[in-house]
Length: 462
Ligand code: BES
Ligand code: MN
Ligand code: MN
Image (cartoon, rainbow, N blue to C red; front, side, top):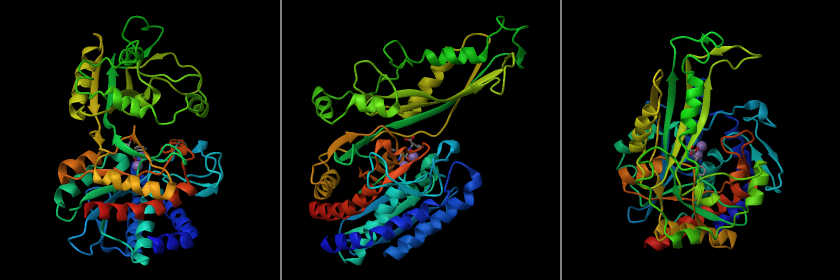
């Protein structure tokens, strides 16, 4: 991989400026007003893949946003790595909180990123991380050191549930045949503590609606006499956790696989400073399920969180009113072996059962996804570990991740393939938040590390 690494160091600056160009396009999949930009991004990703040396590049139409496919097949007897990533991004709002515009990327130095970080929506999640793969591939092609076959599958609907990717995978088993799926859409512990994500949480997401009287009422004339949907919704939500911060939905924990004491002790070895954690978030104390550490609460334990709540009068000044309806969006992060559909049903039954007389409750399920795990004794994990060790000079720590990439479990079901999650972002990179950024160190390290995955994996499979 010598030629590859030389090529990478000689083209470093161009790799950064190309990513900056990609980040200027607002490929927000959730908001239809950006539809043209999302499609344009797919086309650009496709051309970049072709320029890098991919063949059979195709912008595959779906019922939603296209999936970009491309490959380089040398020999059917060689192993094949299928790279997955996404070119869509989260909405930029609240835009007022960005220190520079979300789609005008700039490089700024921070405490954590003294070498500079690119600030833009999608810098880390996932355009920056996805583009590392395109550049690593380019370098291996130019140096004539790509040791195996590669396929790329880059989608544009990850942030809205990957529904059409599911259909694409079902219909393209043959084209997507591979030995392993390689994904860079997660993070690592810190720039001097490399880690590999060995699991992702699943997701169940619902919207709830509580209806009381058939119209908004004067709170003086009717207050105290009828159920106030906002009061009721607040009470119902509060009752979803008990005094130990356990979730009260009956059956919620039934299928949770508890880690052994050994596994928990292993996890506890990862460096974590509660003080630094609190300081970074400007909070006095952490909070969560009793009996578990913060690291555990955020990875191996399931959660239930309100993501949004609204109803009644929220304008200027005071309006005395009892609203007819109240609403909330609730997410549940799931761990093996919880099943999202089953959890959604349990939630629905429970939530309806706790609604007092005089109110009506409606629960609408949104997209969800199953949890996934990558065992550390798999060839894919071993190859990734060897790759990080080469470029960081340290063995990476296996860490279960808190986020969700529902398609990972789907790949396993549909294609029978495990995914290796080689993420290079940091939790502090503010993904989904204002001022998302991606360290230049991280971007570059990613491009340097990926080629070693290919060589190690090819060696191990032989
Ligand atoms: N890349 C993230 C998931 C992630 C980030 C996993 C960091 C682990 C560490 C992905 O783009 C994402 O945001 N997923 C969503 C779920 C999706 C169904 C909208 C999530 O986790 O909320
Ligand atoms: Mn992502
Ligand atoms: Mn995301």
